Image (cartoon, rainbow, N blue to C red; front, side, top):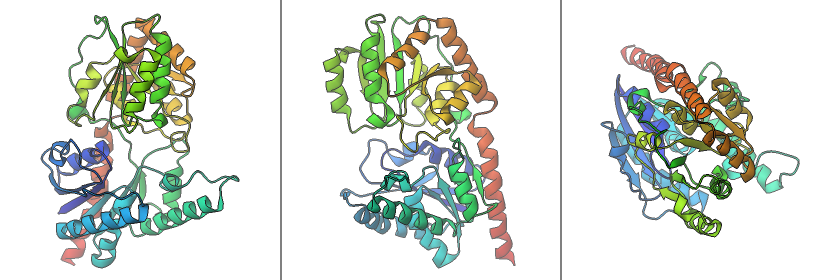
Length: 394
């Protein structure tokens, strides 16, 4: 039995997609179609281990969304048709929009992995203040995604505090939708933790997309207030960014350019080294429609795995995890002074930091890990592929 994972990410390969590929390849033949709109530093085969990868891309990547989809379709569709898989696993809405035609033409099984509320990528949240154009775009994308979802044999969604995705797709595919969390893979990430307390310098770590939406600028402003009492503090941001130059200017203006450093995205298999050299992790999503709902931040659980106490946006979903695990300090992510106070509470109380770090690690080892999600994922695919085998022998 063959499974083809269609992955259409803008930057490096999605860790969620990598984990799914590594889990499924234990039982079946897995091929990954990896399309990226820009040439990247990290190659596809480095991202997915020994899973077969067909790397695609376009040197020219247009700005217009409709033209983008045309380029995506022309590049990706022939590759997934050639794969001749029994099941096509679509990682995200663009992948589903391309692979759905395979279902129509061949009747092959289709799985949709939805980890975003995609209408929001094109228009703001529905409200009385929406413009006519925003309303048309929102509802068009919503209806198109729902129509494609009806073609799917199963739908995987990430959890949110209000279950917006689960409830929505359960209406479309009743009894064929389930939650799959974004959680760390213990087999790859659980490395020996070195001693952090003996280091003079303390490193504040931000992992993931570096943008204003992730609170990068607010963190720098908070650090500028912190260096007076903690001059040995360091800020390390690791990830893709289109505002790196702007942040460098901000750090210089705030007088903390020596305390600030940005690294390019690190391989999925090497990220543990970054966490292992940090002391505090920050997850400072800003108050946007989707971020307010999230409970599935990979950065949150990876930080917990590596015993890092955290500074986390005080949003309902994130609050539920941090409060349950007692693994961090909740702050107003828009307020640099509140972020600063949270950091001070951890830096000035080593016993509190150590306790929160140990709490988080214990919860990940016991509950919030990919090994638990893998069992659900393999069970779903076993049922799908058994139905394929049954139909072939009938």
